[in-house]
Length: 256
Image (cartoon, rainbow, N blue to C red; front, side, top):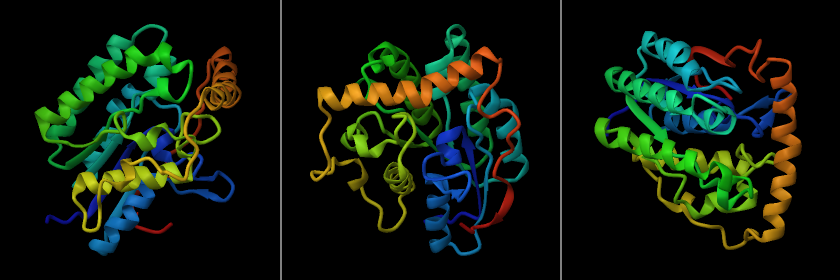
């Protein structure tokens, strides 16, 4: 099995690590967890995380992707597009076209690429039904790119574990600490790392199963923790990522 020496993570808040730790004590996130696992197999791995909350496909295409290429990354993870799914009133088709361009450039980078579909929001949030068509559309583009370019694919959409409430943080969009652990395990399986398996995708029989009440509760939490802050930023013409820099902007040894 090939080893990796330069891992660069691209994306938005999910890859930045929101809800796995906090801004005061420090974030971890699935990319950090994956980097630690990789470093256990190939000591000396250097790792950068360029993800910033609130970013969209065009931000990764224009800003993060060129940096990853300049760093000579031999492993890239990319998880981007949920902000385009949930926030773009207009221009979603343009965002999908930008995603196609991003995939082409990733394929030309000469790195192993791990990408992911998005979970079925309709099984987590009542409002997910409104977004279902967009989730299906972006997932189709992601699966198609993985097939064309040989990307390693994590399919969250079909995983039973992704429908369980404790996989998600209170805003019901970002992963909880448990969710980030599952995402890291999923990426490890996609890379074929020793000891990895498909167990991450299986529903935890000890966890609560989604019910009508839990889905309604999730809707309330999503509105309080995700929708209202976004509306406030939108009214002010701001993004949650404005003024923020990547928390690991250069390739450094793995330290968490």
